[in-house]
Amino acid sequence: MRYISTRGEAPALGFEDVLLTGLASDGGLYVPESLPHFSLEEIRSWRGLPYSQLAFNVMYPFVDDAIPEDDFRQMLEETYAVFNHKAVAPLVQLDTNEWVQELFRGPTLAFKDFALQLLGRLLDYVLEKRNQHVVIMGATSGDTGSAAIEGCRRCKHVDIFILHPHERVSEVQRRQMTTVHGDNIHNIAVRGNFDDCQRMVKESFGNQGFLSGKTQLAAVNSINWARIMAQIVYYFEASLALGGPDRSMAFSVPTGNFGDIFAGYLAKKMGLPISQLVIATNRNDILHRFMSGNRYEQRTLEHTLSPSMDIMVSSNFERLLFDLHGRDGEAVKALLEDAAKGPVSIEDYRWKHARKLFDSDTVDDQATCDTIREIYEQNEYLLDPHTAIGVRAARNCRRDDKVPMITLGTAHPAKFPDAIAASGLAVKPELPSHMADLFDREERYTVLDNNIAGVQEFIASHWKNA
Ligand SMILES: *Cc1c(COP(=O)(O)O)cnc(C)c1O
Image (cartoon, rainbow, N blue to C red; front, top):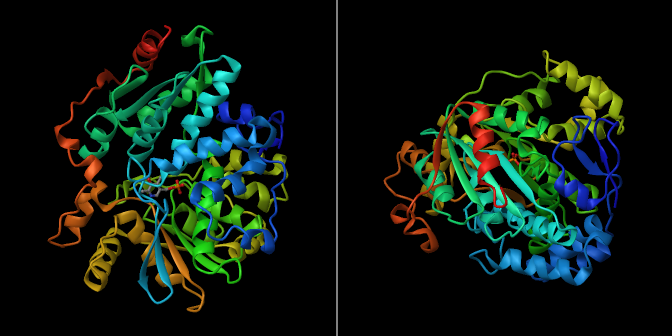
């Protein structure tokens, strides 16, 4: 499988190189040159398979000659064995024909574990083969950092440095990062905000001179193709469990960077019958505004009860724009350069096509809290605020009651106790047993000034072979 850039200028790469590369050299994102397509008969034959075997069938075409079949099978078995539910991505019923798929049964209690548990293993496999080392540098406002650290903690060929804004992430989120110990794990609390952290990461990728050519940076944010690939699988899993591919399904997806829902769009293109995909956003609703008015416009960031979806631009949306423009990299490049300067629109017929692919909704904090309370009162089932946004949007946008509606449950409610309290419920969400002692564990992190030279100097002198 070859991968090409959405901006049309960077060289095509194979799977291994795409894994190790963040942005393409032309500023674009890598996408597969062509998608595998599965017949209904083939998909039907996967019914009843364990999750890791289904994952193999869905993902192997993307990997193919980069990793032998048996090695990849084994990697997937190990990856999904660390989840705390035998079914890995179990479905919970909310109402007639309405479901939540619990994607928070991994080590850090958010869906990002599905991809990052695999990514850590993939990186180490490829680096071992090539006798190479990488430094992962990432910025986090919450869930990505902990999932990446958990995913890389056993990697022999990876050092990971995660920057978080000092005193500006929730205590659960901080502890999930800082209580994981290993000589390749480095948490940096920056005296600044999330944007400062992200800027330092971006600039460091642009100029890696501070590493003196002894190692290179690798990315773990959702621009990394392997993350999208791993997220395609659970759409197949949910569908097969509810009678697919012989009936079509609807999915509602709490969305920030458009990674998770883009995976659903790919599942559909690969042959899975999906009749509706709902983009569910919080008040940072650039995607909903585009879908409803054909205007892609950055606004200032709002802090909400669903912080993992607090974004101003949706980086993976570029991958959809590439398809909407007939895979014309030049057109995408021009559009996104304009979008960096001000609001943009696309041709009407392209936008109408996007509206056929997706419905969308925006859900504010009040409606998020109302939904958490309503579902708890109906079912004694506690939603986290991100999943609640998905459920609210699913109910608002539903087209056909006969089609099963599945909301992706992106996080465990115990990660976001403030939102549960704000919903007025007297219940306190409990951490699962493997994390019950989180507040007693020792924390390790280094506080650094909001200064890129200091951060780079820290990284250059703290990676394993420095
Ligand atoms: C990252 C995250 C999201 C948003 O996912 P995208 O792939 O960026 O759309 C939603 N919910 C939770 C809990 C997350 O951690």
